[in-house]
Length: 116
Image 1 (cartoon, rainbow, N blue to C red):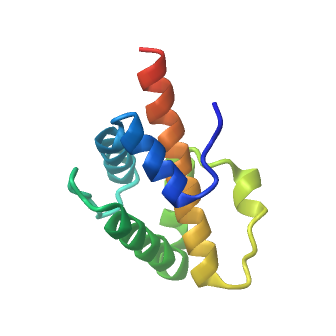
Image 2: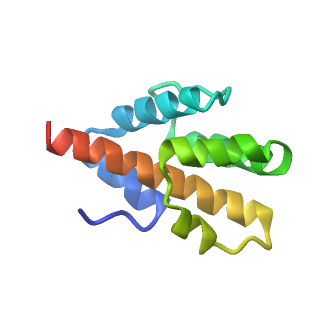
Image 3: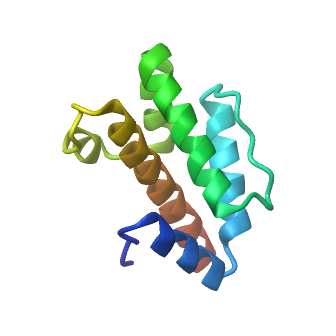
């Protein structure tokens, strides 16, 4: 499996394989498991998804760091990838972490679709 390198690539592939709704459902499931009060509608526009997730991650980093770490753990974002990000600019960091979250959720959906 070749992982997408940008948000647009990820969304394009999810739409091409008709898995965008499953991606949203998986994200909602993991957000709920992490007790994050955010629920995306299945038909959310990709741009809105990106913005809302980015805002949520930013607020978690700023105000609820323990919940942020818990979310990363539940979604199973690789710690090595998070540590490799530049933490100087929190706005940029939260955007990058949002993409890592979506990328990991995409992996789960893709594998489940391919092997079930």
